[in-house]
Image 1 (cartoon, rainbow, N blue to C red):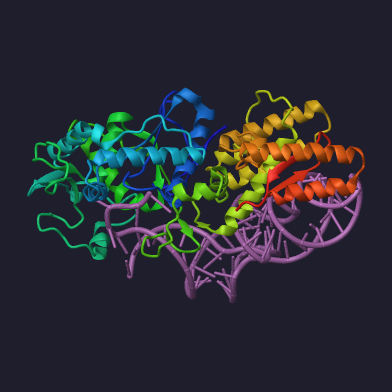
Image 2 (image 1 turned 60 degrees about the vertical axis):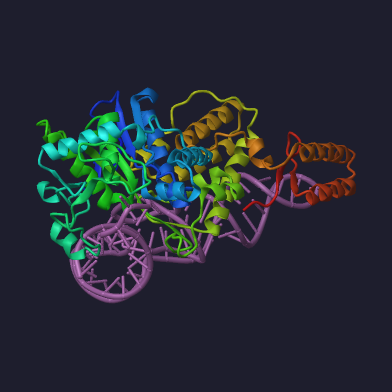
Length: 465
RNA sequence: GGCCUGAUGGCGGAGCGGUUACGCAGCGGAUUGCAAAUCCGUGUAGCCCGGUUCGACUCCGGGUCAGGCCUCCA
């Protein structure tokens, strides 16, 4: 099946054809590890995780190389380290670990590569040197700056001209810049901050150069797909292109940088942008204490990735109900065998159409219904296999269905409930309905709901989000 | 000011120039000792104004509103 994706640079949906089907390369901008990730940070992670899973289905698990960087050199990191009186790696290691744990809770697979700035300083310095050698960058007062006028395509990704940018510039222009839009590749560190050696003096890299240098070193140019949040188009990705393309000029190459660009839409929180000043930043680390990670994942996939998504309590509760329904179906057939099947075509088609996850989820509902209405064991087995395989590409329904409903119950509660259910079963067998109802009320009082089924009663923790 | 998104039923959210999206919630029925779940059925749409068309939620033009970017924020 052919995959089509919307390419930000071409501004249209295009067929995706990798340069090398046995080595498909994907890069997504990752976190700056100075604090916790918020729910907006999680959207690209989940979206591109679905793309990663889809590409692995299309080209084979070992044929996709997915890199997501970890930015571990940054002013905010320096600030946090300074305030806490520790080395920066104490901060960065801590938050990188938390980030990976939190994203794993959202069902995101670990990328193939997680390059860090501190481990790639050689590549960064080399790329800057190439840019200087090629006449695309200049040193001034301890800084090295990219000369935007040296790259004719500058502004193409974000569709803005240099004139527009100058007109809109609100930032104070440093006197050593040739052009107000020139951006920093290397800069001196302030006293007390970490420093690395370079031909232009001790200092640290700018933000944009790390991605293009790590991509060149770890994936090789050009890569197939570069992804990230919509807000990174300018200046970050615009600058990456400039660096990645121009650095090759020093060696007489011009292979391009990224063959396709994909950007996810913005996430708002109760209608507003999340910001510290509004005090409405929702951290994933906190949210997963209240809401199952899979609910968050499904909610993030409920709208098309390019559109906006408003994060609300209503969205969470609707999503929880929907997922309960799906797991309820799976639970009913928990003893039915599954076998290897191909991903059902309708789901594959939806995902291959620029990751149409809402459509794919609608197809998932149809597959769940097929499980419910199956009339033979063979049909049930087939339907269940289809459902779970389809859900797998979306990273959903992969946990035990019983555990889904009983999560949050400790062992003593589980034992107590099981015991009461046994008593109730005996009462029901004796048609002692009043006793059966009394026991149900007692179970209810424990915050648990009991449901009778043909194969005995099941139970779940009530309420939720 | 420049650039870019979006506007669909009570809520979330897709496709599509003419025929059911789907989900959550509601309603009716089946089933159930009761309940839950499930199944069957059902109501409620397409920001405004023009235009194209036999026919527009879907195409074109113009508005309005909302959000984002232009400040090393996904």
